[in-house]
Structure formats: C-alpha cells, structure tokens
Length: 291
Image (cartoon, rainbow, N blue to C red; front, side, top):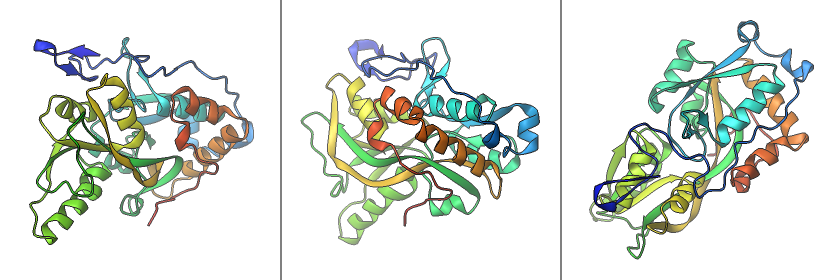
C-alpha cells in the first residue's frame, strides 16, 4: 500500500507495480503440494506437452486474483489455482503480462495457450474461444463512505470500471440505457486500463462509484482502511473461466485437472487461503456462460 502526496491513499498502483501480497487481506500464497496425474496429463495437446509448460496471458493487477507481490512475483488466487492445475498436468506455468483486451486475440493467434485474468465466461466470448469454468463471481459496487450510491439508480453519476470487462461492456451500459429510457441522464462510465486505477479514482473522489467483480471489490474495500464501502449487495453471479483456443482439447485437460483438485480438497484449500471460498464451484464445465 502506498501514499500519494498529501496523504491520500493509493491502492496497489505504485510506480513499481508491486503490491504487498499479505497486506490487510490475510491472504496466503503458500504453495500446495500437487502430484502429476499421469492419466490426465496424457490428454494435454502434444505441442504443449513437448514444451513442458503452459504459456499464460495475464492482466495485472487484479487483486486478490492476480497481481505482483513486493518482490515482483506474480501471485494470487488464480495463480495458485492454475499452478496446481499445471502440476496435475505435469507442466510448469509461464505467465506473460498483457493488456486485458489483447489476451483473447493472442490466444486465437497461438501466442498464449490459456488466459488467466478473472475472465467472465460469456456467450459473446464463447464465439471465439472456449472456457473451462473454475469459480463463481458476482458484480459488486463500491462507494465512498457516507456517500451512498444506488447501483440501480446511478443516473448522472460517474462510475469507474476496468476497460473491456463485463462491467464496462454489459453491466453498467445496461443500467445507463435504463436511465436514458426513463428520461434521466446517463451514467458517465469512466474507463481505466487497470483495476487499481479505477479503485484509486473512487478512493480519491474522482468518481462516485466503481463496479467490479465481487472478490475484487471486497479486497479493495478491505485494503482501503475504511475509505470505501460496499454499495448494495452482490448481483449477477456468473462463472469465471480459463479461455483457450476454440476447439482445443486443452479445455478438457484443464477441466479434468480441476476436477481432480476439487476431489482431493486442494481447490478448496487454495480458495480459502485467499478468502474467496464463497465463490467455489462443485463441478467445472466447458462453456458455462449464464443466459
């Protein structure tokens, strides 16, 4: 956690892009012990199997799911889980930082084997990639303390989102459209390339609210030391998924590895370590978009 001149809180987005992995979240990045499952590992596409690694496109930071710790290492709930999945498959992970909106095109181009950036599995995205679901998250708004905002009536307000997320492309625009249909002013959607910048904008009062995935908003609230708070309940629950190339058998390999980790309790341990156990799923699927 860093401070701006004048004492204003800056969440996570230091110049070095390094964040304290423990902070006030109590999260743990202690590695779990995973053993290769030969039968499942045999399902991995030959090209990836021969390389011995998964090349993973990831957008940072998006705490507590994926971000850099104080030493510059990429950590988080998503990281621990995909590392464990790779272990079951007998692979290592090669994380490559990328802009969020470039990850899926890079998967299509064959640059990355898989994306890992809290992707919501949507029907639109399923047209170009396949997803293996691994978590369930909702949308959660946040506001400055004692400055209430109603997510269902934020007409004329400034709302921060991360660019190209579901909040940017679907959720907040739909709310804004309802405003204009009712003869009210639209929501001013303020877009940021990084989630930490969207959060900072709210902490500093540059926007009235922010909308993000529920585990991300919960973490931001905890890190803000009382400066921001939840605005309304969690809603629009939907699955996170790992995107892979359309038709790739890797989707099934990931699914079987995750089923293995769910069965032996490793999945629950990782989720609980990061305080995101509320979003655990019982059965992963390929292409599980809601609606």
